[in-house]
Amino acid sequence: MQESPCFGTMKIMKITTEFGPLGQIEADALIVPIFEGVREERFGAGKLIDAGEVTGKALELTIIHHPQGVAATRIVLAGAGKLEKFDAAQLRRLAGAALRLLKSKSVKKIALVLAAEQCNGENAAAAVEGVVLGGFETDRYKTGDDKKSVESFTLVAEGGSADLTEAAERGRIIAEAQNFTRELANEPANLLTPLGLAAAAEKMSAEYGLQCEVLQRAQMEKLGMGALLGVAQGSAEPPALIIVRYKPASETGKAHLGLVGKGVTFDTGGISIKPADGMEKMKYDMAGGAAMLGAMRALAQLKPPIPVTAFVPCVENMPGSKAQRPGDIVTAMSGKTIEVLNTDAEGRLILADALHYAKQQGCTHLVDAATLTGAIAVALGHLNAGLFANDDGMRDRVMAASKAEGERMWVMPLEEDYKDYLKSPFADLANIGGRYGGAVTAAIFLGEFAGETPWVHLDIAGTAWLDDGKPYLAKGPSGIPVRTMVRLAMDWKD
Ligand code: BES
Ligand code: ZN
Ligand code: ZN
Image (cartoon, rainbow, N blue to C red; front, top):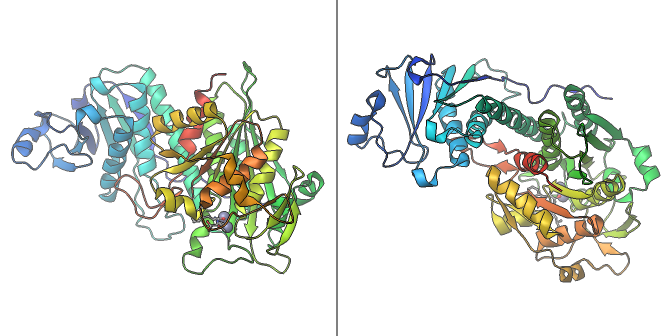
């Protein structure tokens, strides 16, 4: 097996919680959330509010040097917007934006104050998530010595209790897992091949006590994974099917959650080759797989009550001399035959076999995440992932988790009638459905392999990558839907 570099461990800041009075907190900067229309008198802020310089509008940041009455060197008044609208998602963004501003100014020791009314577990976790996610940069391969990083972060929970320390720790685990996913998704395809991704999964699994197994080409041939192998055959890089297993200490119910993620380490389109412009982005065509591995990394530490297994089919989609051609007919592991009309619709082919295999391995509930179609970005833009479900209960579970985590998803149709779009004259189904409804027909295709098992498909092609940075997040991979998957498993009730 290939050696893997360490992912998700770069420049980790020390995180602590304190409950004492904020006046005594020693920090280079103390972030204080302030609300629109709620007057802050401390630190000399009153004057700034009267002058109209400080309003409390969301993500407005004002640095006060040598503030009155506190030990900290600086105060950052951080706009939290309207008090009625304030929630954990807003706090996550605020913490991230303040941290990024301070980091850019080489500030090293940072603290954030949670007022007594805001002291709850959700907020404590979100604040820590905000700073850990905000601290992430895509500068792994920059060799300059001007890279900035924050040394420590202290959550100051005024009047809070020890359970907030636990919540802050949960936030750290989840956000570091999300950064692990972002780092993997940002890796260039020469440095992260299918076997390289498998090596990274093995290393992560060993570190966190998860069971990891990697199926090689010969094993997949024996299993009859013709759809996956057809995509792999155009590349000199061998394919891999990563399986990562978590089992709770004591099993209560019968459910077994399967997390399936698309792991195309590079998508040229194959013989149906993509245009050159923007093709470099296709290094993140494994973002769904990376997200499922990130979720497992967090779950190994948080220990949900149900067994969870991740399945990540990994291939490189290349137009080599052995590549599959348009018109080729392949037989999936389920026995269904597929006419490959477009070799660029490769994600659904590898997922077809991975979904079938996940069911065979005993998964009773399935979620897949995949950068599957450009069409989902046409439909929903970059704000919402598309959510398709064959089961209302499963849909509601994932939607509830996504809402709680501020990872936006929008329910899309998955109606039987769309199956007609995938008719092939020569095989059981075609791998594309024509010009219209591209995200829906891709989901319908996958649904043929999920079968009767309650299943949710997340098309993250529009949301896995942020083209523009935000004040609270670097541009690049978003790490969606790691948090939703973690909450889905943690909140599971049969
Ligand atoms: N990986 C792409 C989808 C994609 C597009 C991801 C943009 C991220 C950003 C996928 O494999 C693909 O090529 N899909 C085709 C399907 C078509 C051939 C039916 C597409 O969306 O054009
Ligand atoms: Zn493609
Ligand atoms: Zn693809």
